[in-house]
Amino acid sequence: MKRNQKLAYLFIAPSSLILIIFVFVPLFEAFFISLTNMDIYMNGYNFIGVDNYLRILEDSRVWNATRNTIVYTIIEVPLQIALSLFILLLMLGNNKFHKFLRTVFYIPYVCSMTAISVMWSMILNKNSGMVAFMLSKIGIEIPNLLGTPGYAMGTVIAVSVWKSFGYTLTLLSAAALGVSQSLYEAAEIDGASWIKKFIYVTIPGIRETIAFCLVTTLITALQVFDQIYVLTQGGPLYSTETLVGYIYDRGFKTAPFDVGYATSVAVYLFFLIAIITFVLRRYATRREEE
Image 1 (cartoon, rainbow, N blue to C red):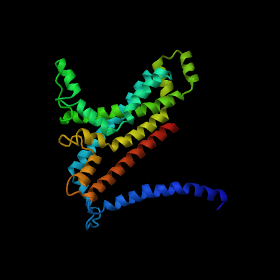
Image 2: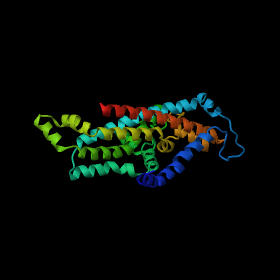
Image 3: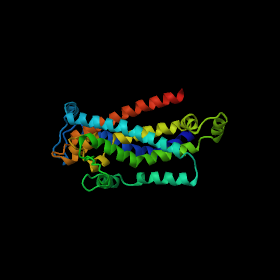
Image 4: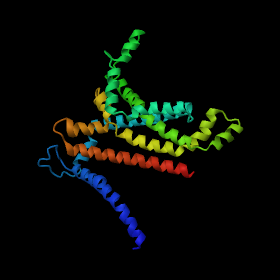
């Protein structure tokens, strides 16, 4: 082995060791626990093979949580990116006012999701919330947005988008500032309007950043938990219960604290995220090659 190769292995050894300890070992351990009937007290658990996975197939709450997770993801992710692009269209530039707006929109993202969720649960309260009070002054009565199955998921998605779109907007704004001004000047010479310049110059110029935002927000959405736990706790009637919420409920909230089964659902979620991310990345890579 050449000296340069030895040095290369020496430099990557610390990060490889951290990766093994904090990523691969927990993954292997989670997969092992999913094959047992371990409870939260770890008393006398046994190896039960794939029984937990067969149990998933017959568990209606898993499929309900899967459907809710996918519904949340396919609405929240495009909505967050579309809203970010729309605001980027309105404030494309780098003057002081645009910098101020980007800072304002980014503030909710740096706040705790739990704090944000508590705030919105108070604002949207049907009896004492500010929204219900203001609308009642003009004769409009709103339903219980967090306590009605038909409105709860939409309300949770709206709160999530409000909290998180500033992050996506910041990334897209930074990418848009890197688009060459000569392209905009050429478009102006051709008589392109401001919206055509955004569609035919800005969007292609930030395509890779859009793909990055799409993948990262999608992975985050598939693991949604804290805002739903604070706003609705998965209710009403499990209409907002997602896979991570169900994992928490079976493993740590509801007796008999079936950690083995909850871990098998977590492994199922892991493969669901891996497959969706792989397909999305392959599609994005193919589009980039074209």
